[in-house]
Length: 226
Image (cartoon, rainbow, N blue to C red):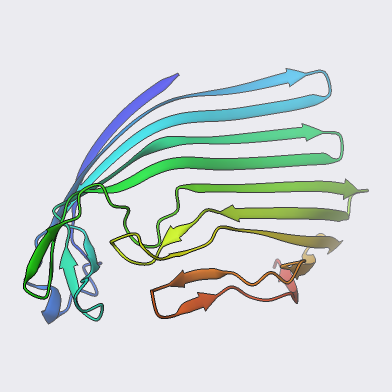
């Protein structure tokens, strides 16, 4: 079991990239509390490790697009997120399985936004492009000392594209596959088939346009050590 808390105050952008337009913004203070448990088990030939954590994060004065004009940026009074996350790792002979996921509740706690001549309180609404569910899974198997095949799953939940939460990008699940070959102690070759089902999905977006994820594609890479 473990418990930890942290507090910090950050600029709204990196110190190297703060421009004249951002000099009027306040610093962004934040606080995080986390409690959880970690364990490792050896069950015969099976190696098991897992982590389970509960967290609560609160940040103030974050940047978000203006409702009246998305080309402008405003600061949120307060935004928070609480939830649970887990990670699981298994090793059994040539097999390896890694899984992780999170369920969270992101929300505005205090956000006054002006739309025309009307000011609205958006407390309780979900910030844009933030998912409430996410999960990843990797299943891999070694063949001898030089080859490894793997299947990868990524799931991302629904994300809102406006602060009023009336428009959203749907959830998606993507599958990839790969094959790695250790050609020599100094050379690793890797071939990947990404988005096996050629699924059409949005990674980022607004109420007027989406940025789509990569369609089915093949990628080959190599890593050489000297």
